[in-house]
Image 1 (cartoon, rainbow, N blue to C red):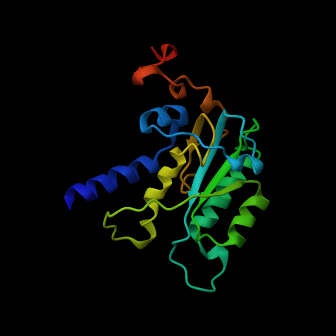
Image 2: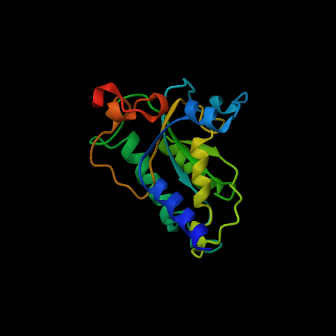
Length: 192
């Protein structure tokens, strides 16, 4: 029981921080094969950089409430605004912003995010047998779909949790030496 809780805490901690992942490396580690991807019809799949966040449908709302009552949805919209429209924080490069959603996210929320400029991609929930006492965190593990190259077909992905607030532009993060792909987890030469 304690071990399961430790694993959950560890996975949750990973998702709280900004995660830069190389999908090519992940495919090698997990022996995944990239299938023909139809998602490229909804956003450019040039194989380079993308930004992503995650939105699940299991929030503390009630049937018939307004979309804006979902604080996670509002936070995803704020992040979309910051990345795509806000003068101080918007991306200067044509980097796609992808919101991963679970099947239970309302279509009205998905459309609003699309209208705001984000690309919306539905992902399957990751089934697990970990006991999670907080109902709104049950689908937290599904955030790991960000590492699935069939969901996000880019070589480098920056995951941003919805509870962060940007204070400046982040375009340079993909060119930072610490975000470069290395062999066997070595330190890039630019950093030594």
